[in-house]
Amino acid sequence: MNVKKRLLLLAVVMLLAGEHRAYAAAGSLGVGGGLSLPTADLGRGVGKGPCFSISWSYPLSSQRQIGVDGNYTLLTEKTQATQLMGFPVTAREKATVVEAAPYLRVLLAPKRVRVVPYFKVGVGIDYVKPDITLTTAYGSIRITESHVWAGDLVGLGAATLVGKTRAVSVEGLFHQILSTDGLSDEFFTIAIMYWFGSGRKPQ
Image 1: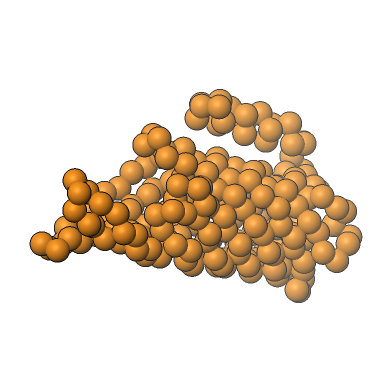
Image 2 (image 1 turned 30 degrees about the vertical axis):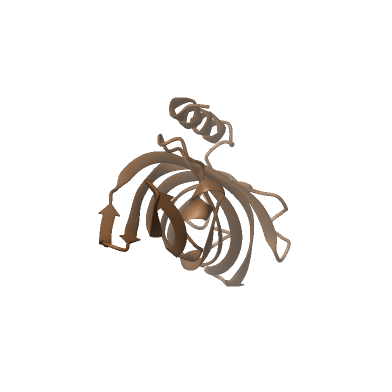
């Protein structure tokens, strides 16, 4: 599915999410962090690392919310030995991913229960900056570049109120970077978020 179709699909889902109503909370701000686990081609080049998130959400109905995620991910250095034109080469690679993604969140249980599970899906933009150092017996060369690609995310989470206007959520998300380099750039994140202004559960 190309990028335009993904954006159109998300827009249609949001329009069908339900009628707009007034709720006690006008919106909620969340901050948190966790662990990023690269997979596929990305996982062969870089290692796991920390992720930091800020998110805003707004209720469309009692069971559906829209929002925007901002994620900063540091994928740590991994070392690999290879050969280039018959010469041994050591490659050390790390990467930074900055993601901005509008999302739809659908609650999977009534809000009156203590812990509310939810489904989350979104599409957005990923800024990706790999940092590669190649070392041979004759010296080293460092290669840095940056790209901006479309991306998507999908996953599950659960949230609970910890006060009248506070909530905590835990979520696991699968992120796919729609790169044009022919590689499979994917990673998982597991994060804990603390929410402010949560008049309803979760916001």
